[in-house]
Length: 147
Image (cartoon, rainbow, N blue to C red; front, side):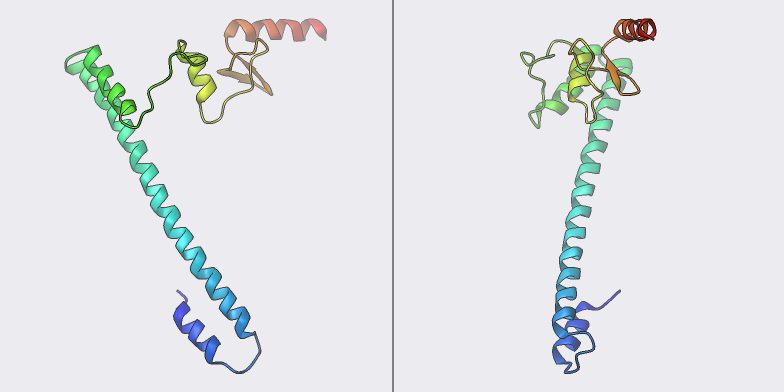
């Protein structure tokens, strides 16, 4: 690894302009900035990875509780507690707040194109999205009929 302090000291002490001292100083400053940014990103990645891990373990614990512990309600409590802590319980009055599949379709990280009816989709073909098998069939029938 480059010893940036040594390089910077040499650049400040050098009197010969093969590469300018200013350029060396600029490069060392940029490398220092990039190193700090890399450390920050690694710490953020670690934090996100740990949060994801804990969420997976909570869901696994919910299933264990459901199957081998105190049953469904106690298992569900693991999930409620996991979401309630950071304030992530869904707003049941929000759009799709009473339909689990549509809620997921709307709020996933990379949603599919909307269905022709306007609902968020969980089925995707080419550049089209569908909220149900029925709508996928209807669109296929219309497409076939128009050809």
